[in-house]
Length: 161
Image (tube, rainbow, N blue to C red):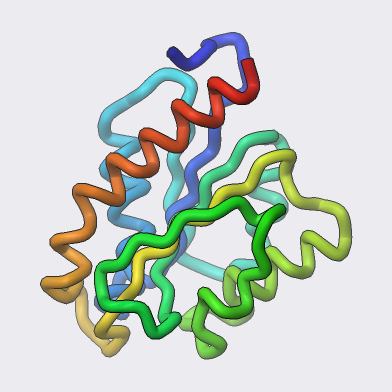
């Protein structure tokens, strides 16, 4: 059970809603926010990833959700702690963001401005072309991705207790 006296766990969905599968992080954050769960703040971030450290600075526990392009099968869900893993192999080098998640997270690591717990959940995309519909592979992965984020929030709360 999430402790209401703790700073809420922050879920940041990152993406571009006009680049098909790149919107998956936004969609997942929106679905979680609509549940109105106590102890969870879920926001959508559409723009410049350089502001991510400002978004997470008041939260010790953060889950960042974004599309990836690592060569895994489309719809694959990859979850890991940033403290345990370098992001370079997971996120594509060409991002729809000015600087992508991987560059900002690695910069925050160097500057010592990562939150106490930063978990990344990446959903492997298939189609990043112009449009507003996610590919079938990514659409099929969304319910499991939402459940994975909710499970991660419970795990983070248990570790913080």
